[in-house]
Image 1 (spheres, rainbow, N blue to C red):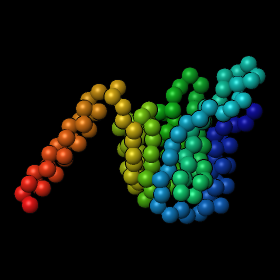
Image 2 (image 1 turned 30 degrees about the vertical axis):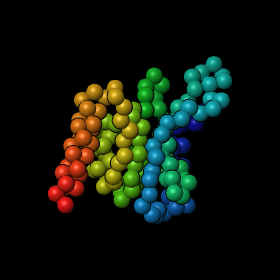
Image 3 (image 1 turned 90 degrees about the horizontal axis):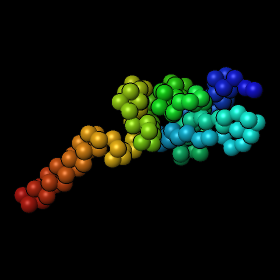
Image 4 (image 1 turned 60 degrees about the horizontal axis):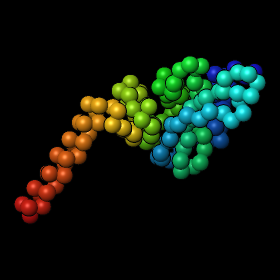
Length: 143
């Protein structure tokens, strides 16, 4: 019954009034299905939230379109927020170049989950860790 975009905007504005500035902290972006929302013969509502971990405050919400996933909603959620100087975490579904780019454009850092099903990216990260481990061993031998 609510216009989800207007509701999200109201929440964001209200939270800005309550917490005008936040110290650098982790902002966790995660999706949740709203409990009890599908009891009237309709599909359950699913939304993304941005949660400031240290202060325990939800900074914003973005509702996920029906028959979609969270990926297109993440940039919309990030657009609502002033994340400059913070660290944004997303789960493996949000580990996308466009999302990382959006976070960097907004002058924030990110932590992204990575799973084996992300093929070449997963292999590259494993290779980088092996390379770093080898370099550390070489440095220890030199000393």
